Image 1 (tube, rainbow over the protein chains, first blue to last red):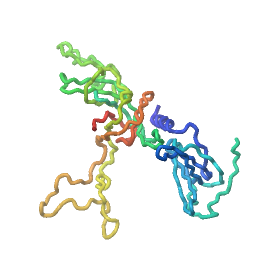
Image 2: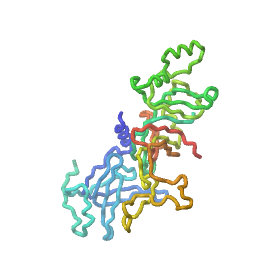
Image 3: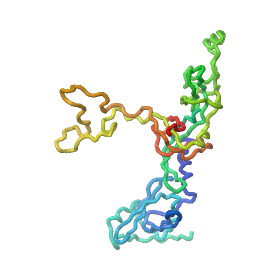
Image 4: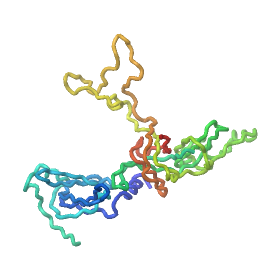
Amino acid sequence: MNQQEILKSVEQSAMKEERPQFEVGDTVDVHTKILEGEKERIQVFSGVVIARNGSGSKEMFCVRRIVAGQGVERKFPVNSPRIDHIDIKRSAVVRRAKLFYLRERQGKAVRLKERRVDRTK
Amino acid sequence: MAIGILGRKVGMTQVYDDSGKVVPVTVVHAGPCKVLRVRTPDRDGYEAVQLGYVDKPRRLASRSERGQVAKLDGKRAKRRAAAGVESQPKPDCEPQRFVREIRGEAGELEVGGEVKVDVFAEVDCVDVVATSKGRGFSGAMKRHNFAGQRATHGVKKCHRHMGGTGCSASPSRLFKGIRMPGQYGNARCTVRNQKVVRVDSEQNLLIIRGGIPGPNGGYVVVKQTNTM
């Protein structure tokens, strides 16, 4: 095995067996496990996926939402074991890989055009 | 022998620990290493084990490298045998690319034996010795983290210079040890007390937390740490 294959196999061990399927522009609910003292509970962060970067076990994604009129972004590792699951609420027609232009928009302008996807398949 | 092995840096990546936190790791392809020589206090004055990593084609090995691992039966060897000089045991293997000694008692290891990455199964922390990436002749800013000079306010063509190095008529010389530009990197470098995250004896991998010196593909020596 050459070096890159070795590295890949190590990364594979850190990745989830089932790769979470979502795309940039999707509105998602990210269910994360958080520790409160001794107890573990699940917290939901919902918003629009505005970017994905990195590859393999290093892949991250960024979720943006508006809280009390203030934009909030949170980055998650795609393969983090702390993420319980990701629900896709809505998909949108987007024409670029990074939706950073949403940061400059407010109110109604933040909306994205919906893309109907049949999720039953 | 103090627990140690030779290997090659594969590269860095990240994995998750038990609590789900990201851990930056370096993957090292370590061993299996052949034992080429056992140093004893009687003969050599110190205790160590000489290890070799990765076979080298014979056509690339010098005669002395071939003679290190196997008997060559040259004229000189015959003369020495006739004179009654006892030759050292040889491992009878291919010449090795990377050969280093690791200090410490040999224990059960014998010439011709093998050291595998399993020896690190119980080890928590390691020291890694390697040659750092060469950066050539570097300025004081890169080499010693000097601040350089200002971008404006009358600084002329010496924005990355180091500034003053000493005094004037007294002492009219520079003190020794002033940090200046010069060769940076391509030197033996040790990182100490790095945690072992995982040992993969199937693929001969050692996964170490944090960075280690040198480029990907560079040879490294990994030893159990002796820091307290």
